[in-house]
Image (tube, rainbow, N blue to C red; front, top):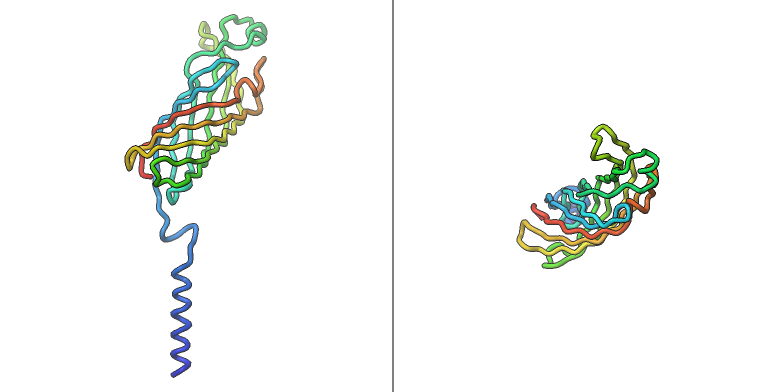
Length: 197
């Protein structure tokens, strides 16, 4: 009888220990998601330009986001004089777009105002265009890394406003008269997040 009682006692202890175990994946994980329009101000080719785009992501346990974002320049930036001379096109413009996977950590998601850290890892393209010749186009594929810090205001249960400061690193630039410093640099952004947080 004592052996049976001891066995049942050990079985209860094992069950209690199992019930307290925490795991990354499995029961108890909370999932959410969001989509957001994004507006940025940054430097491209020595000019301050607006960039707009969109991002979305899967939210894990209110703390981690895995997502995707895509962004493109609004307006025109004059191509460098070296490129205009090389191609003998006085009206040449520079265009820049990028996209990539995004990873974000959110601190204290349930507080009215909270902060996070974010990184985009991806690629993009820069090219020269001639407004007088739709057939002229040069395209250069790029590597883009953009870490950021942000602050988020919880407006409703399904709506957040986020302000962000980032720095964009751009590599593999191979356009006449353009280097990574012309396409990289600091940026300020505003995003409006809609979803289940």
